[in-house]
Amino acid sequence: MSREILLAGLDSPAELKKLPADKLPALAEEIRRLIIRTVSKTGGHLASNLGTVELTLALHRVFDSPRDKIIWDVGHQCYTHKLITGRKDRFAGLRQLGGLSGFPKHVESTHDILDTGHSSTSISAALGILLGRGEGDSKVVAVIGDGALTAGLALEGLNQAGQLGRNLIIVLNDNAMSIGRNVGALSAYLSRLTTTRPYQFAKDKADSVLPRLPLLGPLTLSLLRRLERGFKALVLKETLFTDLGFEYVGPIDGHNVHSLIRVLQRVRTLERPVVVHVKTIKGKGYAPAEQDPTLYHGVAPVSTAEGKLDDEQQLPTYTEAFARIAVELGAERSNLLAITAAMADGTGLSAFQHRYPERFFDVGIAEQHALTFASGLALAGARPLVAIYSTFMQRAVDQVIHDIALPALPVVMALDRAGLAPRDGETHHGVFDITIFRAVPNLTILSPASAGEMKAMFHYAFELGGPVMIRYPRALCGPELEALDSQLEEGCPVPVLGGGKEVLLLSLGGLLPEVLSAAELLRTRGIGADAANLRFVRPLSAPRLRSLAAPYGLVVVVEEGASSGGVGSAIGGLLQELCAVQCLGIPDRFIAQGSRRELLDLCGLSAAGIASAAAARVKQLSRGPLHRL
Image 1 (cartoon, rainbow, N blue to C red):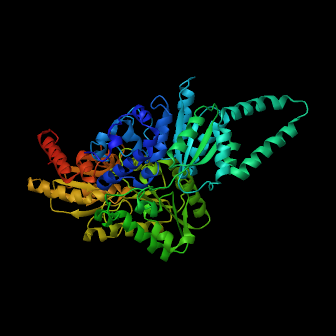
Image 2 (image 1 turned 90 degrees about the vertical axis):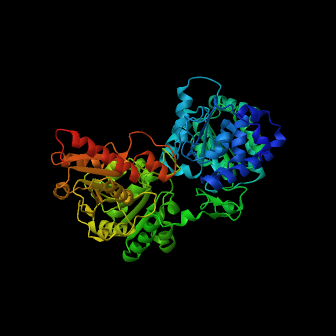
Image 3 (image 1 turned 120 degrees about the vertical axis):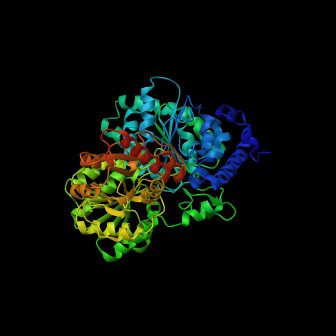
């Protein structure tokens, strides 16, 4: 028998509305147990989802999804939403190949309005939906976390929403006290007062009548408005929102489902933009996550009894290698300053932060600012090291090109999660950075195949004195091969496996172990295959590549990035008159979630996939009139 007795009978928000109100707290606890049990097997965003259970129930109790649009910012707090919108029977497959995404996904359900995996998009999208649908009595709700408000996009959305004055509802999920502390009963009383119909009616009348009174000139009216805002700011700390044109409600206890429902019911009747400030506890209901919500924000499978992370997450990765390298570089260079955008732990820079706190800057979810801030530091003579996930670097393309590459500033950029990002799916795969940045003048782009090579690349980058980007996957570091110890030469690959003379496999970065295994598989099939590590995405040494490729009839370029416009395209152009070139990369489609092994197989980038593709091409060439083998 299911341990989720109440949840077992819920397949839609309509059924949630029928549940007796006094059963809602018990339902919330059932949902928490299921999330903890499931994430212990699949991994996922644990703390953030445990903190939004009651809020999600209240939203679906009050609003009529999907007629009313509920947009989840970032989306990593949507597990309860998925459970009560008809997907609980598939929840065991969360973040698995062919299973449920860990983020909202429009192809999964009509209740998922927008595919949200990056932050701070909800307000802009919600405002667009609100204005684009025309007149109607349905509502649009944007649920955004306090951390996401640091992004310029969220503030841009707030600015226009307040200016237009339409009835957009923004639910601010505050789990870090970053806006202001709860002021208690007076705040709750004023929130109840300002959302009642009599208050709103009186305010509307005052807004229309006061300006016409002869005794109240413009200066007097302006003074009254300032006094009103000043009093509210003193009591509610709401200056930002009220000055932008929003009604402010809160702070509200985000774990009191009955209080949330009452407030949202009143807010639903408003015909003006409103911010509902909800205070939640990240990791609510699971002691390890409550005690360390940062660690348990997004985790691999855990032991629910002890709250220990799975051993696999403790194996050496490129991120861990970077963490050590950053600390070492900090010791060698007193002018090295490290920057991240709300990802100190995820990128590994937390180690640098602990060692050199005065030289570490977390700018929040503000990638554009992070890069231009780094350009300013470089202009002042510092040596900035910026660590950002590849998928999030997409949000700062203009800043990389104009503010760093154009003036050729010595900024070193570490792109973590470059390539496939297991379990997180389409929005998190870092597969476009090569295509985006390969054409940018002045920019050097490298990709290491081992921890030792990564260390050499970062030292090379800081000695180079110009803009450098170093991309690496979310994967275990490759083996420390003797060939990888050779000195870096601009644009030059390094041979790793020789003696074949039929097929040359050119590997980029973390795929080298797969490429070496593929070469061995080809040799067992009677095809002489060698391997080399590209090292550089940009620049590429045409003479060295041509010299390396000359003995072979086929060169296969293997990269963990989009095959369209990737480094293989550039190499194909350089070698087109010399030999046949085959490019293997991420297929020209968005790739869903799965384990790294599953995704490499799916994309044809596993050893078996590479060998099969190369063997098929060899066979094709041997039959053609222009075969070179």
